Image 1 (tube, rainbow, N blue to C red):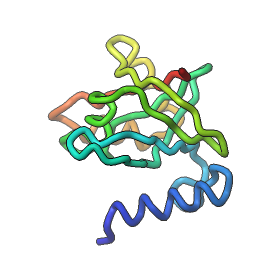
Image 2: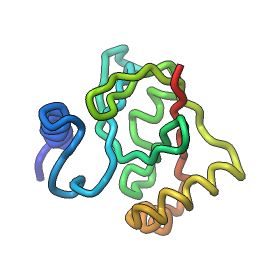
Image 3: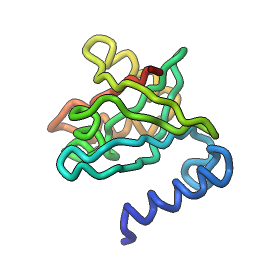
Image 4: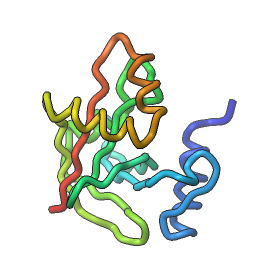
Length: 138
């Protein structure tokens, strides 16, 4: 199996080379590049993520493909919610907020209706509630 960091790097390069468009699994999905600082390492991190614009904000899901634990980038956001994203060719400073109920469930249902794999992840996860993060322009 290939290294997830190598796959992420390939997606990041393709995203930047094609003004935010990526092929393969991501061909019909809206993506952003999330820039965080590692909560433990203090090192800059970039993660390509499926997003759903919601008015003047972006919604991302800490699903980790239905794994029993949260993705590392989620902990980075909690530790430092002042982050940036790349959307298309634009870099945007944003503040990340973890959605509380009932908004979390409403937003999750909305994005799962658009991208059915999120509905599958929710059924797969039994040990945690999958966080929904709202990114708001600063």
